[in-house]
Length: 222
Image (tube, rainbow, N blue to C red; front, side, top):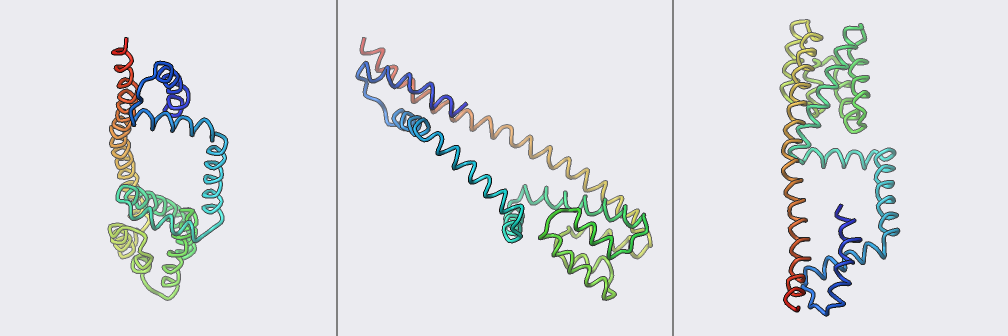
């Protein structure tokens, strides 16, 4: 809508202002020049955007370093960090529980669960935990060394390990984190809605001011 307004609607106003020799305000000139830039460089802009998107996709798909940097940056953003932590914890608990119930050895179960998360950065971190489990350390202590999962999950794993009911504890954790994740996403969506409305309102206001102001000059000239 913004691009259509700038590239198709504003030029019509520009011709009116020029024909009637109206002094165009700075804000209106900015929008007019922006529209000209989009019209004159449309193919270049589209090609540039596609190149950027393709480059990011390639780096994310085939470059571990880029994935790791992206993940670390995401963890520094408060809202996204909460969602990622809950998603990873929920998926890990779900997979690990199913594998333990199937009789898979714990180190193999942890390794497969790490792969299911589909994040090479997390996978390499959890390999540290697998190494410590193989050395005879407790599951909860070993997993805590990865610094990936919330402390609450480590505590639940410890309780399950000591009670011999790790699968049941993982099931409880899975349900808890899934519920928290749904609530978190719902809150984020609800907070985004008013933000989008404000952004649209600002654009509409700027557009109206930029177009209406010179129209007043036009009406006063008759």
